[in-house]
Image 1 (cartoon, helix red, strand yellow):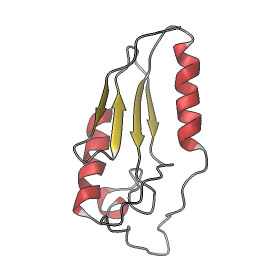
Image 2 (image 1 turned 90 degrees about the horizontal axis):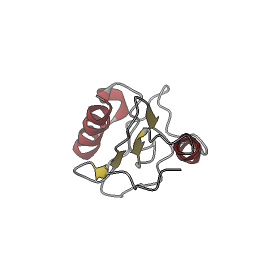
Image 3 (image 1 turned 45 degrees about the vertical axis):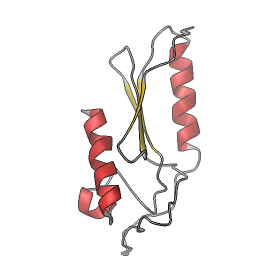
Length: 114
């Protein structure tokens, strides 16, 4: 098992976490964030807007990473810590974000992937 802790970088506003890996696999966790800062606007609701979090998605993603580490490799990990009512990084920017802070987090999440 790997013992080195991965390099961890947070986005400029701290809403997105990036953990450096050493293999060509990126584990992305777009939903499941629990942060709901009151100063950040909720996403605009329409009949198609989903604001309910996926249950246990962060736990599943982190458990997957732990299992891969047992194979002596470290995948990259990208985690959105904002609740889905604030940010949905699986939507287009204009649908997934309603506030300047979340637009920045959306961009940084996708920049970590690329």
